[in-house]
Length: 136
Image (cartoon, rainbow, N blue to C red; front, side):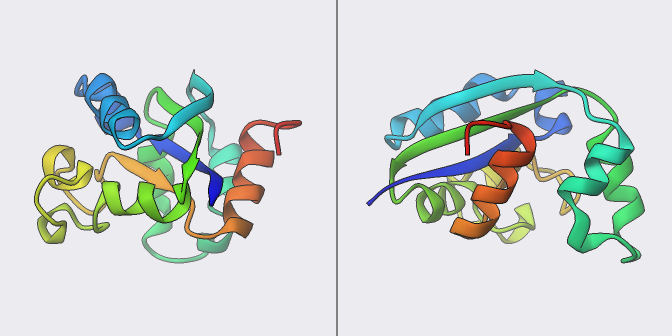
């Protein structure tokens, strides 16, 4: 099934110069960008994106991390994009991610794990409408 998903190449991966390598992985797997933007977000926007995490002890450092510098926000489309992109990304903890996944190759910690991807059709629709109004 052709699907769309939302992806962030996080500030750590942008700063480390991994954007091209990560984009290449997605494209080689058959996922195509429908929209892509380099941007820096503020704390208020991070709070909207991570609304379900507000109030949790791990959230303040995550908020600080996501607002520290530029990131790439994008919509990827392709066959089974939701599951396929998450599979390519690997486990949230790079130390536990399967070999040859994006997080295993480029992530350095649970916080600095270089990518985010929607985990359901509902979160994809919500994240796409937040980050790319009018494209949902």
